[in-house]
Image (tube, rainbow over all chains, first blue to last red):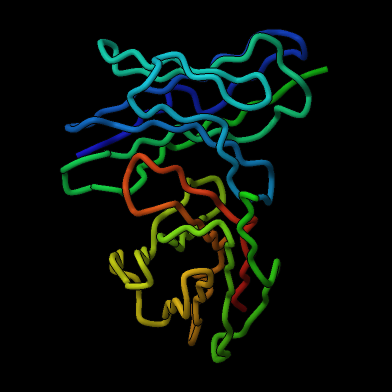
Length: 117
Length: 114
């Protein structure tokens, strides 16, 4: 079985300061990991994905995430927050092979990012 | 083009109405999905179509009826809904139903059942 825990339900930062959104996962099989962003009343947009290639993954809009197998973590970072980054972020795991959850996405509960001027 | 389109954007329906939600993608993806998202919650998977065949039904009530007329289109037929069915309904697609492939989401249909 697979699961995702987003360690913070809300994160508040000032514009221009770093962003860290934390995610821990559990997976019995080789996981693929994703971060999605959802702006209010919008669909989900893929920020980045990890699928067993490089452990440091770069995404859109200056975001990146590092896959750490020993810590079962996949934290999302950005060096400098922008007002437009204010949204809800979902960490998502999918098992690439085997398992009863094969192919299905498991979502974390989401982290709401607030950016102050 | 990585766009998934959904119509309508908003839908208000009574509990005795019949309506349909539509989803379209032109990325050549062979897997398509319906999700339901309540406020302040992550999306919940409802149905998965793989190569135009229903692969997964997550024990969704029969008042929701999916249909995949061809590889680019996905419909969700609604009948005799309850007020608790009010939610954002998201469609998604991926290259195939396999965990390595990212899913692309549409903007959603905001459904209100009165």
